[in-house]
Image (tube, rainbow, N blue to C red; front, side, top):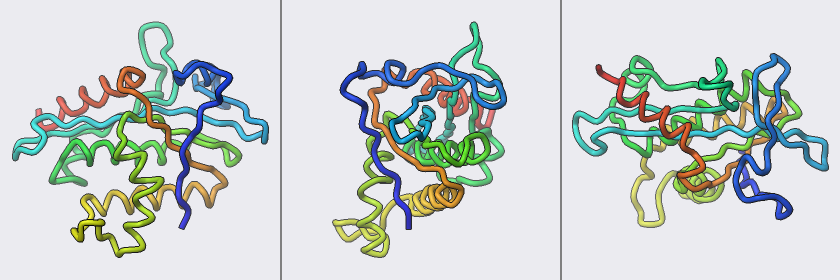
Length: 205
């Protein structure tokens, strides 16, 4: 089993993502954020977020988004914005919550990375969800060792999505892609946040 690691920002740069990653274009001439490392691996930055309207109620609606490139003028360059739509969400997740939406966003980011990035790249997933970062890099190791039982003795919530996330990381590792997570403040994640909320608002309407 391969586990993702945490991204550690270099101390010589500013703290925000766009202080560290530069705007560039990829092999398909689509805008991206990238950073060269001393090892020669190229790090690709993506932002993820999930949102759930009426979280915890029977009429909850959730959506998620992945942003993999900067804006061009007043719009996001296609296909830089990926969102979970209503059909996908209704089919795959009958019990939407904000936590599930956050994990779904990461699973989608891993899918995008597999389709868009090179085998020599590292994908850095920036999210404002501490649950996602700690769960995928730290807690999940203990959950697996305890057969998906938490430290309090209860079944781990959203086991299906954590397994989906780990499968995605494994698939990328098989292709030579590494995965890192970066916990960022919400104010640094506004584009993905707005996109996820728009996706949630469109579910069931």
